[in-house]
Image (cartoon, rainbow, N blue to C red):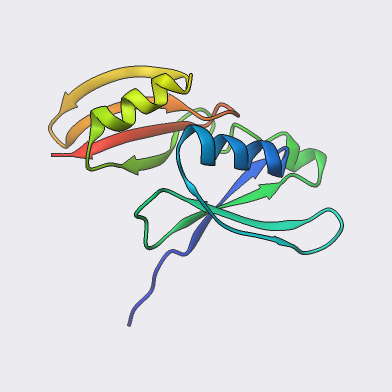
Length: 129
């Protein structure tokens, strides 16, 4: 049996604003942007070099969904971005004025820093040991 995680849904308030952040600030690739209706689109982004899972940018369509934008995990780190060059990507975050929540540290599992996306979701940037 083979299974693979294909996408993780991230609730956003605006498709274009989210696309701009992920492609311009984090250097993700826009994989797909397909209109499904007048108000709904199928938008996927992924880090460069990623061959598996992508992020599905899902625009909030109800008040309940809108209340979750930026807080899908109750303030815990939500997503984990592995890199082959920690300081290259960390400097890119700083250069693009991405909020660094926790400065780099070297841990048993690798070098890590925590940053926030445009909505306040927390990410770990990790270069595994």
